Image (cartoon, rainbow, N blue to C red; front, side):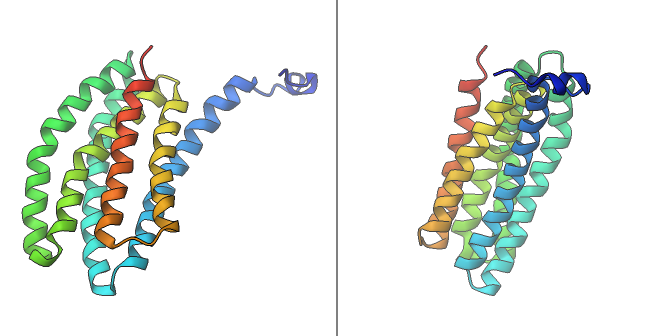
Length: 194
């Protein structure tokens, strides 16, 4: 499909350039919306006190994700070969996340008590998954393959939307959320092969 002549006459960018800006923006919007929707779903499923504990635990996961994004996302984004750098960084994420996840689980289990340790365990397992998915997402966007990042986040969001529709217990909801993140993580490297 060709753009109308007036589009080019006004100096507007080509359709490909518009897509290069819209797809990453939509991907980031989808990523942020999935975090908000997860919190809303868990608020519907948990009692107020349990939700407060979950919110603290989830905020720490997002903090770890932000630190990972700050450290690795910049390196991946500025790399001459962002896909290769993202895949290499994935190994670092997986190695570094093991002690972080263990410390997270121990500290939060002490904080919230053994009653909620299964939910804390799911969130601890989620740390390497969400950080890995985010690292590969950064690599795809930096390599101008934002559709890969969008597909990864869209799969994860589909899992989250299922939680909105179907009534499941809180722990099962969190496990399904983690499964969506894992499928998104596994989808990203398959789609980034040149």
